[in-house]
Image 1: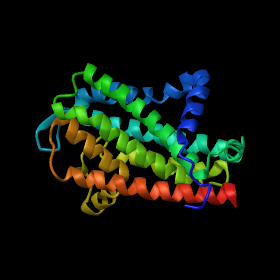
Image 2: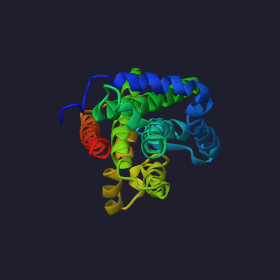
Image 3: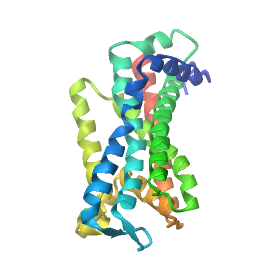
Image 4: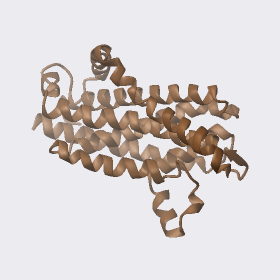
Length: 259
């Protein structure tokens, strides 16, 4: 890294974001309710008409138990993506907050790690809240569900890193239509609401490349107890996302803020 890029003080940005959020905590937590409403409407509403679906190990699951892990994965994704895209873009292009930060000992890498860490916290809080809802509905039936929160943090970390890297290339608010264009189809079609087997084989291959698919499969396996070695492949997918996102975000911020 170039000299001055990293001062080891990314925690200062976390403290700043925590202080600023005290006045807008309702907006901060509002994203938690969307997957809960989906669970009530789809799982316990439409689910009475759907019946059961095959789980990861082939055992039948109620529709609510089937979609809840997908909504958990979506909670981690939404919290991380929202904070690492819209909020970062405003600070970068309009409030010029990062320019002021670079007048302090903080460097671009500190800024990248601090913002990604804050997005990770937001995604983790959404996931924790939704896990509590799942527990209240009796949808956590395996001790492996204890690992669902750490797995959700990995998912949030990956989406936050890639989200911030992508935001560094945004030129205007209109470019964020691309974020919706990517996130919404993933939410609808990445096996959140129905199994992969409903697609033709060529479309299954496309879905299997989507990051949310790997998140859903990981959560579904942990919350239902259908744990197998193949889940390590899902974690490896997110490890690659994290590394690539961090490197690109740090380099782009170094270019945008110091050059």
